[in-house]
Length: 271
Image (cartoon, rainbow, N blue to C red):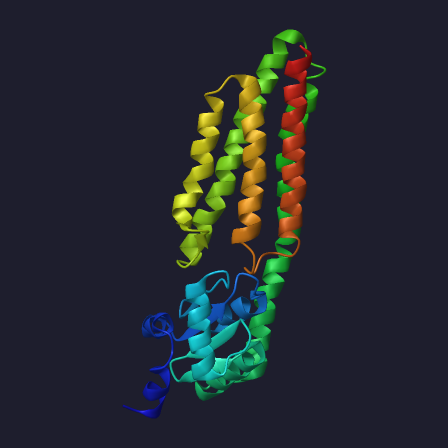
């Protein structure tokens, strides 16, 4: 047994197992900000690294981190390890990947790494204006139907309110599908205790069930589902390399949808 294997023998089994299939393991907590690390690893080791999230609320996870701490000297998360030994934090990860690039014959070594990461981040930021245009454009039917129902003729009010409920159900299905797409890009993506594809269909099913209720209850249920979807996404997307301002945009769009649904409900109550 070589020195590296002897050193790794003291690491938690979950880490050693992950290193069988992946070259680098990122060990994080639920509070870790790993956006820069994710961009760096995706640029340099696409599909060849994995993230292990150890929430410190779990006694098992605390024991694992203590074992890793004893074996490697880790004192903070995120912490990165590789098959050839412990790496360290984000600064050490940058140095490690830069050295790998040089050893592999990369023309510019660490500088090339920085440029590739910068291109990834620029691509993420460049898509933000399009998200805003499409996002606020998608809010238009909510506003038109939710507030336009107040000015519609009585025979058109029910049509507008039913259309509002149907549109809300469609958008909720779309929000669930976000996690399906993330799973296709990252098979480690989870939503709490559920795998991402399982959660991805939940909003669609709940929205469909909401439409089976009488119209007032349907509008109330859909509003609650929008709030729940936002809460789930804020927790499950934390730490991912999202376009700048994405979660703020989601909050604004969710607020607009809920207010529009509440406006539609108010029309029914007044009638």
